[in-house]
Image 1: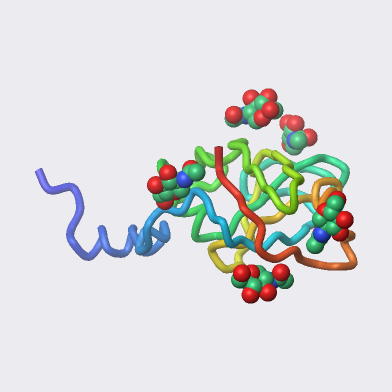
Image 2: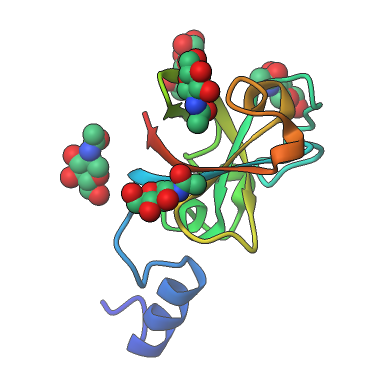
Length: 130
Ligand SMILES: *[C@@H]1O[C@H](CO)[C@@H](O)[C@H](O)[C@H]1NC(C)=O
Ligand SMILES: *[C@@H]1O[C@H](CO)[C@@H](O)[C@H](O)[C@H]1NC(C)=O
Ligand SMILES: *[C@@H]1O[C@H](CO)[C@@H](O)[C@H](O)[C@H]1NC(C)=O
Ligand SMILES: *[C@@H]1O[C@H](CO)[C@@H](O)[C@H](O)[C@H]1NC(C)=O
Ligand SMILES: *[C@@H]1O[C@H](CO)[C@@H](O)[C@H](O)[C@H]1NC(C)=O
């Protein structure tokens, strides 16, 4: 039995961001910081809780992702970010709609282990979804 027409499969793949390969790590990432609130995973977190976010593409192409972001298996997976001898591990709770694939975010309490929030971003970080 054919469950999907070809057009609907293409549309679904496009919605889920499956047009590219799944990316689970990078040695050339850019770290930003964000103020958590109610995130895509459905949790409400605060700036003093150590939480992480990834780009929309990585969130939506994660194995098992569906149209409901709350059910995405990437939620609560740990993201480890390493730069200049420092590593921070935090659970993923949200995505960043406008970020390039290799961008990863930490709440201020985690970002400040790498740089002051005044700096805005840290380039050339290594990260991995573990
Ligand atoms: C990084 O991801 C690629 C696939 O995208 C995988 O082949 C490789 O083993 C991963 N490296 C690490 C260190 O997890
Ligand atoms: C994020 O918020 C949820 C509740 O919405 C909570 O269960 C979880 O422990 C929080 N994460 C951290 C790292 O504090
Ligand atoms: C994430 O890391 C924390 C601390 O190391 C650990 O307790 C937790 O089980 C990890 N979560 C997952 C989903 O692996
Ligand atoms: C890297 O770490 C060293 C030692 O902690 C520090 O002196 C240096 O400023 C850091 N460099 C960058 C670019 O953050
Ligand atoms: C990041 O790495 C690239 C390539 O190694 C280098 O050209 C660039 O200057 C680095 N950027 C920063 C801000 O360190």
